[in-house]
Length: 416
Image (cartoon, rainbow, N blue to C red; front, side, top):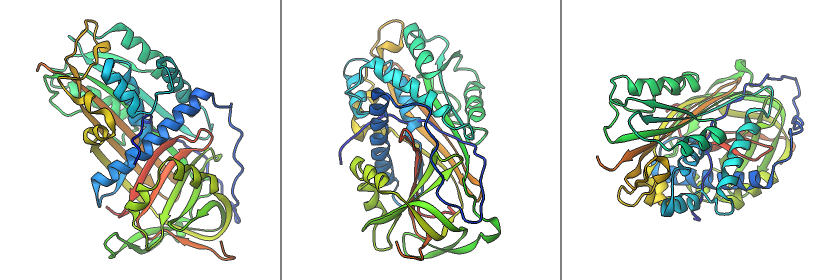
């Protein structure tokens, strides 16, 4: 599988007013506020490449576990970190993120405009994205590094005595606030004496379905697990709808809109004789673009899917190394000299930690993600169609105008 790239990490949230009608049809897609620039398009393509590959790599590493990540959040945190990298480390990160066609200025400007676009795209959506950089108060952080991340990422930059007993709590309070309490901590206490910086992205998304499920029709039904056994799960139901839909020999795909339809959830539902991990491995850039391009408004007499809530956590070191960023984690080879006022080759990435939350119910979806990059100093179709999602499935939350994949997930057990 082609190794790819970066971009990602954000978190989104839209709070949309739900619309109900007796015979809902696929809503029109609102006119986007403006056309995308060439640099934005390239950045989004890189982001989605990175997201699909990151998702596949994480899914493979996690085996028979539920998975939920925010490629945008990871990308944002690494994008800030990239501004402090130099030499081979900068090149490796840029290549891993598939950003070779963009200059550093274009990369930063594209992040800047993408943040502005996503935050102001739908007045019914509450989308919040926040970035911060926390450095040890004795660490001589480079002013140019501060300035570029403030300008393009809206990063809050704060010096903090990491030896304080409440230092981790202070950073975690910021995380909790920015994710509306859905993720309470990302930094372990006590903070390691070798840690000199935390680069953190937080995103929050809350969106109501354009057409809500009928709570009165939610009831426990069988969901087939990956081992073939069944489990009772709360299955939501909506009838007589028209959704964007696509089917091929491997899976069915259906798209559910939020609010005024610029944000949506795309569900990829493998056939019963297909292995979900094989389907995920095959979702490369071409396959994903084909899937999205083949979605067509289709009358669906009944649609059912499980409601679920998931909290997920993963350390991404090994996954990112496998995608080409090994040098950034090497304490002897990494070069983050642009982070420090005095040139040094003793800084390296110790850990990339990722946490997410998602809840899908009859009203809509609430999701949040946080990514922390920890810098250490090396010194120390028929007439009647009934779709029932009663087996393991894949889903994404994306913004339709830009095509940005905000989240991707694999649900093997909705009750886990």
